[in-house]
Amino acid sequence: MASSSTGMYVSVDFHYNGFFSPNPLVYLDPVKTNVRDVDFGGFTYKEFLLWLTKLTNGECDNVYYCMRKESLCEGIRRIDSDADYWEFVETVYSLESDSLESELDVYIDHRNEPILDWADNEFLEDGKGYELDELDEEDDKDSEVSMKMEYEHEWDDEDEHTFDKTVRDPFLDKLSGHISDDDEEEANNGKLKDVVFPVHNENQEWEQMVPVLGMKFSNPLELKLCITNYAVKNGYDLCMRKVIMKGRDANNHIYPIAWAVVSVESKETWKWFINLLIEDLGMGVGHGLTLISDQHKGLLEAVKERVPAAEHRQCARHICANILKRFKGQVFRKLFWYAAAATTPAKFEQHMNEIKKLEPLAYDHLMERDPKTWSKAFFQTDRAYDAYENGISESFNSVIEVARKRPLITMLEEIRIYVMERLYR
Image 1 (cartoon, helix red, strand yellow):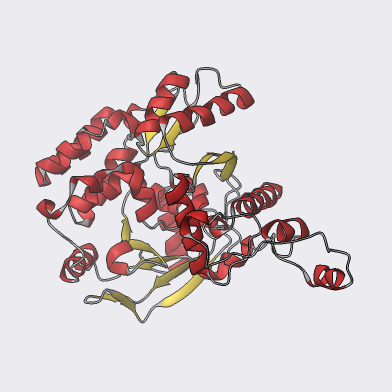
Image 2 (image 1 turned 120 degrees about the vertical axis):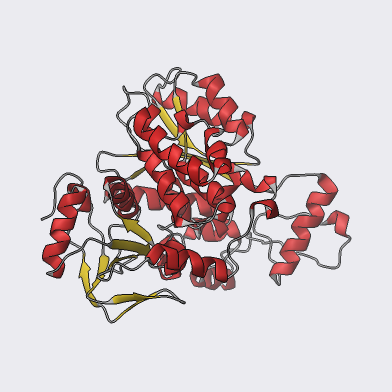
């Protein structure tokens, strides 16, 4: 019963005819069925339940799911409404469609147990929860969340071989100082006498140390000391940050548009990046353009200055992560996503009032974040883009995590090759 509307298929494991047990939260004695030929985006919530009933040959009123790399007490979520189901679909779309191993598990509770309460209790008993007054205000920096929180669509270590595309690349090998077997043979025959790679002298004075492209070091510590001493002596900023712009294609898949490496994320570097996009894409002042990002101050100011007509939304995942630092419990997560997915102001106010009844401080915290930038209820109606989270950005970041550890030129080359192959597929 797959739909041709998206063409998105991933591997999902369904567990049923078993039961949950608390402390630790586990699912025991299940029947497991792997499904990899169903496009869940083609279902409504009710159609999904009907399909699930046929799959399991039984009632499926209590449905939960969890990412494989998360423990049940931390990552379990319930599918209990249309909003829950579309959050589940978003999670499914964040997975790599060509992965052979399942990264998502769906569980059926046949006993009507208080699963989310069990998860919350275990979470607090393990010492992972903490009170409001223990938090530092600095933890609420949206720009830091993407570096600290894990996302459902990060790749496993076994997939790291993807970024070995430039291993033994003749040009890059020579650039980084690596001599291939053929080159070594040629050198022995006198054909590469002019190729000289400098060797680091660990006994020289620290202020005389200069890193040179292709220089050889006997161990990583030597390299670290050389770069550190050079930076102290010359005041040169060797730290690099990446800036990336990505979109979604008609199949709701990641479509990388542009990326760059800068010394620091600031208003000036973001303006430079946006100016290049304006020139290449003909964006003008941003009419019809929708941007989703964290709330980095430099980016906010650059967008207002260069593309003032664009609709700039906040990533709901970052806001959710911040509020869950202060107010623990699945109930806050659930109500927040209801509010973010609400399509009318009345529905939004209904869910926000439920949060207010539970914890007024949580309500105030969210209202201070300008709901017009993270709830569907207030998005501009002339946009053909209804997303309110930036998960695809974190997905792409996790994919290039291995490449980011390479030397600068090698890193850019491997990202280019990955994007080229992805667009070809």
